[in-house]
Image (cartoon, rainbow, N blue to C red; front, top):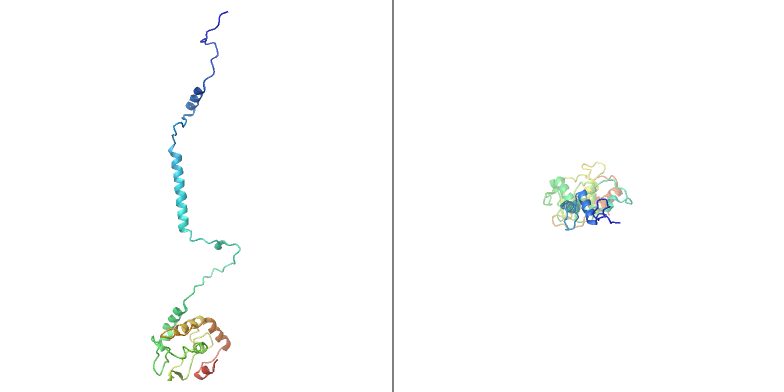
Length: 220
C-alpha cells in the first residue's frame, strides 16, 4: 500500500507559527510593537503641559493667597461684629485739635498773648497735676489766673467737655489727646493723659460750673 505524498493538498496543513500569528495581529490593528523604544510625542507633551500648569498654580497661590490664616474660618472662634477699630496716635490727634481751635488764643508757639491769653509752654498748670488740667478743659476757666507770677484775666477759657453748656462737646478721647499734645510740646516733658482719666474726672464731678483759679487750687 503506497503512502500519500506530503504535499498533497488534501492533507491538513500544520498549524500557523507564532510569528505568523503576531504578524496577522499587527496587520489587523495597524500598530507595530515598541521593540525599538519608539515613544509617541503626544503623551509626553500632555505630561509636560500638566506639570507646567501645576507649577503655575502653586506659584499663583503662594503669591496671591493673602497669607491665609486658619483663624478666619475657625468654627470655635468668637463671633465678630465686623467693626474695624483704627488706633489713632493721640499726639497727632491732639495737634490737629489744637491747631483747629486752641491756636487762636495760645498761639502756635504756645506762648499765648501777654496779659490776655496764658502761655502753655513751661506753664505750671500744663505740667502740674493732670486732674486740674482736665478740669480746665472740661469745664472752662473764668477770672484771673496766674502763670509764672504773671496775671492773665482778659478772656475766659470756653467749656470743651461733654457737659451742660459746652460750646464744643469734645469727647474724652479728644480732650485727652489735646492735653497729651500740649504736655509734650514746646519743651514740656510731662506724661500723657488718658481718656480714662478724663472720664473719671467728668463722672466724679458731673455737670460743674466754670472753674476758677481758687477752686482749681483747692481741687485734689
